[in-house]
Image (cartoon, rainbow, N blue to C red; front, top):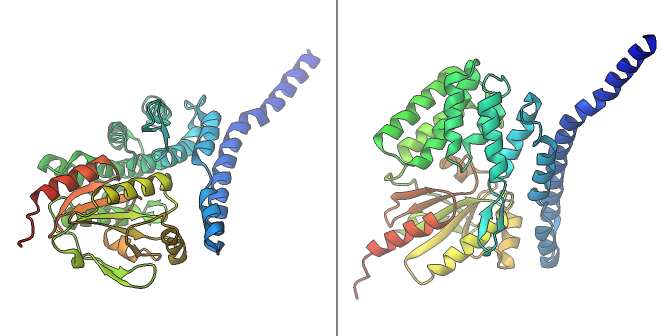
Length: 363
């Protein structure tokens, strides 16, 4: 009996490292990705020649590799509460990841994995006190099913601060559904709840109160139908730029940087859009917060072919309260906003519709 007891204790002790291995693996993967991105950013900043810059740009860490590693670590354990933090990280980095399907069309990957995380939250973790990072990640999710999860959390969580963060995230999600009266009223209700219940909670170093205030500013000044504020600044060569200088033209205004999850695809889409509308009364303008030298190098080798405000201190991005990157505004010739959202087909459709309304210049 004594020997049996010792064997049971020994088995228990041997099991402890195994039980902790998965959480430790998840933390290691997240940290490895962060360090790899920091190293890559440093390499791109110090690259001096065009060849070095091209090499640095092409060596960007592959987020898909890290996402697959993370899923291997957490995918079979989503019923366990420790997975919520790494699952939030997974939700943050995967929406911008694409791969060509059998017909060569870029298709979002990890959609099934993201849905599995949402389902696990709904069925296993609604009462958890560790949902705030998940709510923050779902705020920027391109999948509208995320809204239903956030609404369940904001109404059913036992923690008032978690409810408030979920309400804020739900307000962000509602933006993608339009701007009719009922949706707008719901957004305002959620923003008030966020301010009341979670004002001092910090998300990425910014309080919920500040984020909610920025969203209220967007509703008032930067929603569809509003006249967009003018932007005045300089390009990467310190030459003056302004939005107002393009009166009468359709403007596609892109807030972006080389660190967004799928920067290469964003650049390819933007370059293709610029080429498609070449020779028509439309201009593509970027607002880029990379270091000016990095932006210059991307333009010098024609990776980036459109004009850009150089905004390394985020002054212009703050004027537009940009919270998630990349972000596109489509403006008419009077700077009235007709589209706000991600790059892609809706940008081109909106631009085409506006160009159809532009009257030919009088001869």
